[in-house]
Structures are given as structure tokens and as C-alpha cells.
Image 1 (cartoon, rainbow, N blue to C red):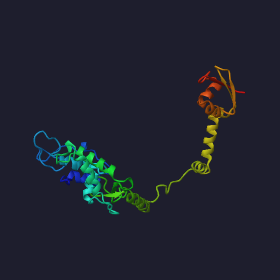
Image 2: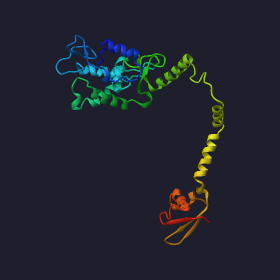
Image 3: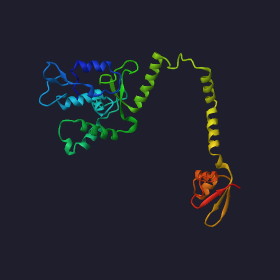
Image 4: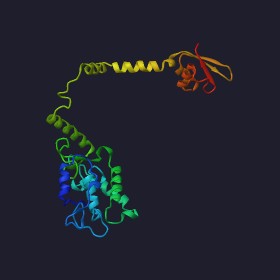
Length: 272
């Protein structure tokens, strides 16, 4: 299971780091006595050819600490919260046991040690079993924007999807009450205000409509379709009508009218 770090460097990073995930490659080897290297997570002396980690348990714990929104962090938080949503109390224990029973029959899963790859496959199977509207999600108890910790498991909890949406709305209102609106105090120029008012009144949609009319002007021109093999002629009110009736592409008909092509699937077109 999760082993809390006994490294003051890890504790300092947890308090000061503001990103959502931390790269474990940035943690270098540690030498306490100046001779033998120590584990970067639990500070135990490393034996043999080990370079940074003393055991795979420290690697899994470090992954849960550095990537709390991943499957490693979700597994730790499920145990921490008792396999329940911290708000409504929805239980995930039966889904987790069902997922574990599905994957434990595989030959590589019979070993009692939970390696990182096995944890990832277990959490994927668990998430597939839980209904979408109550799937467990990782939530920050204290908002990150208001100074809450981003990595580690101390500031995290499990919420279902419904409760997480409600808490996100409450957090947004609390953040707005503390920090105010991001647009407050911004002075817009007169040209910017005029552009904003024009867009609100629908000028943007009218401009797009005029642009479409300029591009697809030939689509509304009456055309005469001539079959090159039989000499048959058919009149249509527009290119789009001719394309739908003959099973052709309207842009190729427009190219024939402009002189860029001579024929299209045995048909040629001309203006009346």
C-alpha cells in the first residue's frame, strides 16, 4: 500500500509545487553519508545495483504522490476514503472486488506484490464497471487557486461525478467571492466595445453569410447539364440541384462552369 514519504525534500516539494503532476525523473539520487546512495522516497540505503529506489513499493508510492489524478492515486484514495464518495457515500467496494476477481486469474497477477502495470490494468477494469454518472473522481479539498496542495494525497478526496460537479460550482463561487471577476478593472477601447456590440447584434453571422454567398455564388446559377455520351440536355435551377439529381459533386460542377474542368463523370455543364 501507500507509504508516506520520510524525505524532507519530498515534503518541501509537496508544499511548494503548483503543477498537477510532478516528474519523478527530476528527483536525483541522495547520499546522506557521502558514500552510499539512499532511496529518494524512504531514504533507506541502496544495496547492489539499485540507483534511486529501494523497492517497488516506493516506486508505486511515488507515482501515487506525483500523479494523484492517475490510477495509482485513485487506488490510494479509494483505500483512504473507505471505497465511498466523501459527499453522498456511494460505495465502490463491490465494483472494486468484481474488477479484482476479473484480473486476478491472469498468470501475471497471482503474485501478491502490486506492481505499477498491474495497478493500472486493475483500475481500468474497475472504471469500466462503475456507471458513468457515479464514477469516482479525484477532487481537491482546498482549491488549488486559493493555495491548496496539488500533489500528494493529503488535500485529495474521492467524489462521484455528480457530487464533483456540484462542488466545482461551489468552488467557482467561492473563488469569485475571494478574487473577484478576472475582467474587473479592465478598460476596453472604443473599437473593442464596438466590435463586441456588433457581435452581440448578429453582425458576425451576417458577415459569414455574405462570405458564403461570395464563395458559393455559382451554386445558385441556373445550369444546363449535357450528357456527353447520349447528348441529352437537362436544365436545373442551380448547381446544387443538378448535383443532387445526377449524383455528382457541386464543387466540380462549379469548376466546369469556371473553365477549370471539361467534364465530370460523363457530364458537362453550361450556362443558359
